[in-house]
Length: 350
Figure 1 (cartoon, rainbow, N blue to C red):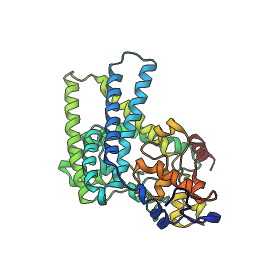
Figure 2: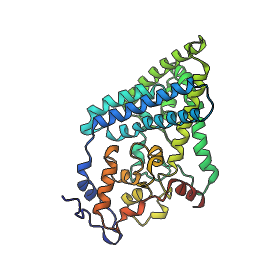
Figure 3: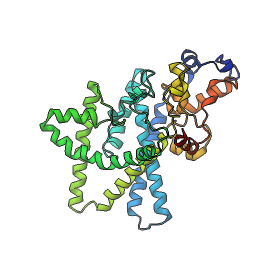
Figure 4: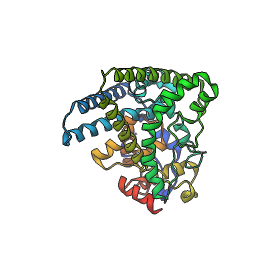
């Protein structure tokens, strides 16, 4: 199929067909493990190196700010691969992703008190039955409420710093003596989701969650012991908490610009598939800042909602392919974002 061929008939704002989209984008479905490994490991190395330099730095000037930003955005990118794990762990990629998931949990999940099952709820965000509804675990409902928007951005970042240590270091040990407490932890405190969400883990995810909780607990007991013995300076823990806060703050700020947050009502004349797509944004413009904010392909968020199976490293290629092959009046051109700040400001006026 030539690059200048119109691959989808979409005149007069005809809704996109999942079948046609799937057929035309098969060439972009292949996962390249070496891209994942290099990208992820570089992000981890840069994140921990900048974190170490930040602790060794005696300056409080521009260099400290720069090292902090590098550490935050590097860890943000490394954490972002949890999104790929949720989408690429089935089918022909299962063997590779099992190894990659182990590395992610060991290098990022353990020190950050998280694990890959925390994101298993994400697939429900892609369900046409729940997307944009109160049952969507990852769709904040704050249209037209500035205080709720600000509370979401700051509140969840603060909660991550305060509650994750409580969950890991206090509730987890106590749950050894109470099966009810263990179920409460797994059902209500083990998901990156809206507070109302009740998790229902598979047997595999339950095993992973418990194993990673145990590893993370051991890791942090060792850190705290070294802290008490004076081997690890208190400044490391303080810096760590500030970095975690920064990562979560930036991540929450990004979430504000992923969707229009119109929750189906404003697009109820479209079919379920297009509702999910039309409520999302693509950020094909924006350069480095957008790439840092919307890491691992999330800048093409509308395209991701069209075809969640496309690996992050092929989203830009798939986007250009569709732009080159669809007519100018295609529905696909309706989701191009004007800018992240513009979209955030729009939340206050809806």
